[in-house]
Image (cartoon, rainbow, N blue to C red):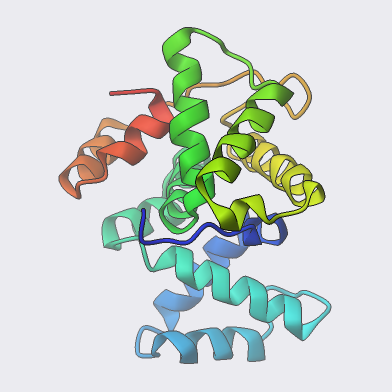
Length: 201
């Protein structure tokens, strides 16, 4: 993950679960297209039905990027498995493409399991962003409002994915990830991502 730069872009590109599935279906229907061609065609055909072309371009770019980290097995799970499993694959795709969100899952969400604290408090986010600002000049340069928006988006993603019970109390709900997916991610060398979601394996 260290090769990914810290970015605050997720604040305008949150869970996007429905959009990710639309792009996955569109990709399967247009397998002959190159990456940029796929994005351009998705925008031209307005598959997301947003009001502006810029928003369509933005979502097409980020969903295509998230799909690039999914192999055929995971793509099938995203499209055809039960909704809880499908959303777990979506969370995995975000962690694989957004360093800050992955590190939050690994350093905060996972650690909550370990210490037996089942709630995400405001201070957990504040301490996380403070720690990242100390580690990175890029993160340190962000305005307080950026941290506020990132916190909101992280909470919303976790809620929509079923990883917390609501957006106010934020009680952690350990996902029930099928063994075949855990084994598959382990075989890909992605044990850290499994542990981030499950608090260890």
